[in-house]
Length: 68
Image 1 (cartoon, rainbow, N blue to C red):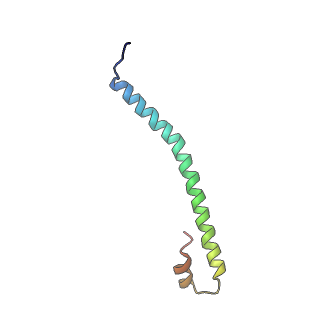
Image 2 (cartoon, rainbow, N blue to C red):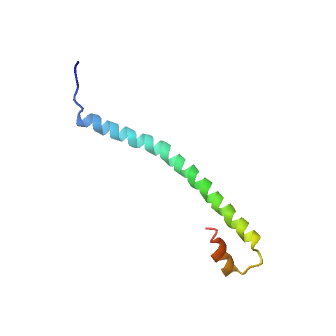
Image 3 (cartoon, rainbow, N blue to C red):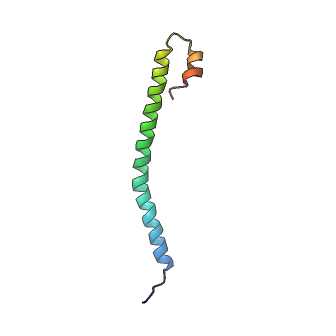
């Protein structure tokens, strides 16, 4: 059985390949996740504001939080 040594060149190519794959998969996945949670939070705030619509703005801010 023969073994081959791992060279620095192979390690660098492996690192670059992992970074490129991570960027192409991680960026869209992170963007979709962010959009999902941002829309969910906005819906929660709007529902809270609708349930308490007769309250002053300061009370709504403390109860429901900000839209942004």
